[in-house]
Length: 437
Image (cartoon, rainbow, N blue to C red; front, side, top):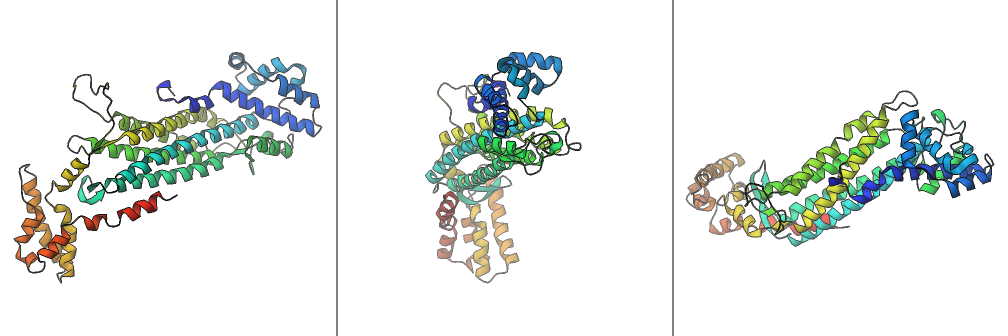
């Protein structure tokens, strides 16, 4: 992942230094348990704990020759440990080290992602409560539907990220398994007690049945969950982009005084943050299919998954970490324009009350089909009039001139129909229900 989108805390998890440091800890813990069991001299475990180290540059140089990263790593460690290094990695396979370390890195990354999601939730909760009574138009197919509030819009996104947090917690649990079971997973050369000891020390748990690798359906579930998180990021990002369109202008990303919107047009204020997040979501989701395809490995193991994971592991998680933090910032600083929302709500001349009119007619004894036809013929005249840009017709004025309406609905009934109260009466309860811990 390029530095532009990498936040240090997440990026550091995938640096070679951290990866090899985890490898060394796995090897050290395994050797300590072997020493406790009398499999190797206690001095060997002590020596590895005290003197164990590595040189990243040397590892890379050795790997270029031997074409095996774990062997290169062990060779570098031997430079520091000396004679006792012959006991290191005893009875273990490369996958025991790599997959166990992979599990720990995924777990560390998942913890950050969960915190990131919670930042987004905090921002959404604050803005939802702030705008719980801010009337705006609800749209379907991009077309005006009926009134809602901006707070309710944001509460819906809060609910999505609350689900995302719960899924990531489950995904973290799914990948927090290790294997130190030796060649083809039989424990023939590595006692299960070693695996249990290392797992406990790392805060993980042993895999129930590994082959020579941890089953990749676990990782597929993890990346699929991350893909859903990405889609929730894109969902609210697209909403912000639509609301910032010139013709809408109900909300927009914060624009700093020194910020430039366009190299050519000085007036531009573009939703670049939300557009960026739409792109980041594509990067994150691109990891899902490769992760699913990694599940099918030959027999007890092959390494077709390895090159995939070396790419998608850092890229998807670094992107997700960056995107969630940027989203929280965008929501925190989002500029909201209630007056513009009210203007847009009323720009169709009361057409938003068409359903309430139809329902009132059915309650007054007219069939639904006839009620729909009566309201629609009036609504279409208002629609066409308003589409000219100069129209002044309103739905209520049209209804007041329609005998089919006035025979059934008096002015008091129309007053009740053309009121926003019906649309807002339940919103506080919905928001409170959604935001409840």
